[in-house]
Image (tube, rainbow, N blue to C red; front, top):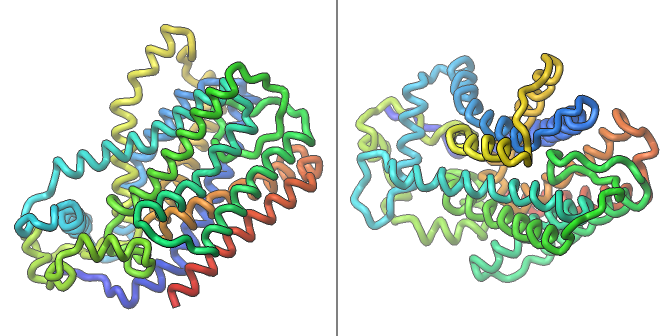
Length: 412
């Protein structure tokens, strides 16, 4: 028999408690990643940003095997049945609606999808690294975090929808709150420059860096921010499975789902599902988070096999001489960065499917608040607090609260 999850039971859990748990771990993982990155770059003097970028993104490949092991240990499902159900879901999702009933896994379409996703994840980060060396880090950070606004703008324009006042207010408040934290901290501190490999979301408290090409750097960041917002929206449309809660609960994505789905496809029975794979013991729909974790892992594999190519080029040109960690302490710290990055990005991909790009990108700005708290506890103490940082942090929290309330009221 085809092992099916009961949507009536799974939906409240996915849209509620389980997603919130993923969200909390995602935020905490980001703080760990950022703090360790700063520690490795400053205290340990290991300044190899592209190599760290390569290590962290390659580590993404581990999340799917770890998820399979977790499901194997905590459920009665076999790995084979989990993979079969995942194959059915992907086959249905990527097969054109006017094609005959699919029987084979769409390898070409899947390869194209993950290749584009790898580019979509990689190029904004690389543009950000380039921009940091050209423009003020405060400008770069503030511009980058406008991706929440771009995600909403792209969603509205793409679907030709009317502006929703609450969402527009929320993303605008989040952007203004970020600017307040960034520039409020910069004006109140003359700390050392932020490490070149720190995350785009880190709180910036430095004005000592003298930009060499601020206009170009800001332009690169704007392109990266827009691209990251576009990536989030396109992921929700083309990569996330239609069984994700928001596809059926949010009109923004329900419209696309209804346009793309065949009438008979929405009423497909168990026998038709089983015929896709030729087996009857598949777990369908896939368990929560398994599909986005598969995509995250494949992105990690693409990074591992492709993005090593710039390393010798950077070494030969002297832009970033290659060097392994000099001692075990540094190596363990880099392992902590990679683990934090893996958990953060895996959680981010899961939440993009469940909550969509708007609330996820605004919720991601809460990392700015957590970084401020972390700096107070582990960094410069109460000196990290300024009126603008408190005001900006409060505005970001309020913006996320507005979107959370909006999602909750729609889901009732």
